[in-house]
Length: 284
Image (cartoon, rainbow, N blue to C red):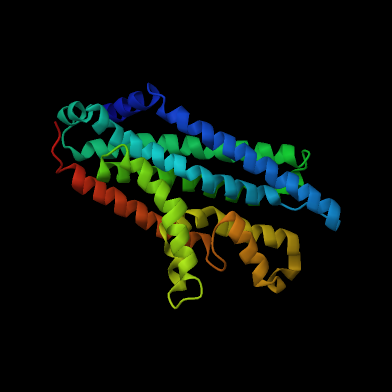
């Protein structure tokens, strides 16, 4: 198994896929961090807040929720790309049992997912720091930043693992790119809008995209409101929360850990589906 994991790491780092998808994660992370806190500085001047708004927390959440799609694509292509290049045949012939290939890929890609998550959090935080004029108050307390950053790394990791399972399930390098993009940015968006004010609107936080976004946003938004409102947080109108969730993801009143458990379920489902199909698929 160790030899298989080493082989997977060699496959990853001898191709351009990992760094090609890391670039947009870094660029989006820096942009979200800088723009978020720079905008907060304008609000500070206009509204004359007595303390800095901890918009750095929201910026990290926003950059994470944009960046996770690239982590998913990396995980999916790490598996489906082998079917395109036909290298999967050699991989399966040198691995016994076949299922060990999936586990080796999950372990190797998990490391890259953590790398993506750390890069996103650090670059978004750096961008937020520059946008805030090096004002550390834009991150709230160190514990708040650490919690949101940790959730961001965990989210990126889980999206990567889900991508590996999805790639094993579909095994088509074109479809594993098109389907996630269409679903996340079109189908789920339309579905979420159509569920508003319906009898089943309560299922919205449990949709895959909403659950994945909620891992970070359902932690960052309450921390932001708590830092701004202080003792008056319970009196903060629901509309304020919903406006923040509209821009930065997540769902009002839905705890971050519930989103985490939901997305863990989706990840396990795709990995199990990928394992079942990949161990029975014919290869040439």
